[in-house]
Length: 136
Image (cartoon, rainbow, N blue to C red):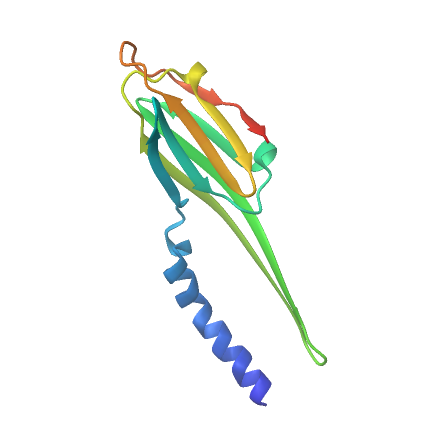
């Protein structure tokens, strides 16, 4: 009986854990900084396949990252089995530096982190299009 009560208590705390970790917003967590002449955005995206699950695009001076993730967690015990699936679509849009061109943006994915580098080119306005993601 104690095991059942602990499991129910854990289930009740799951929404709180997700809230504290930021999952409730459906947003991608990012770091944003300048490295020399580049604006760099690093997005935390563990457990996704960049070839299928991530799309990076620019439009109207905004960089948009879209990702889909399914997460599976299994708990096996002597008398019970529990499996949890979490699916979600996540989107994050950030303003680009003035003059960024789509063809100059580089995106790489390594160890669960997507890094997007946008060189600053003040003489031109941002375009529209998708950005190719390469694996390192």
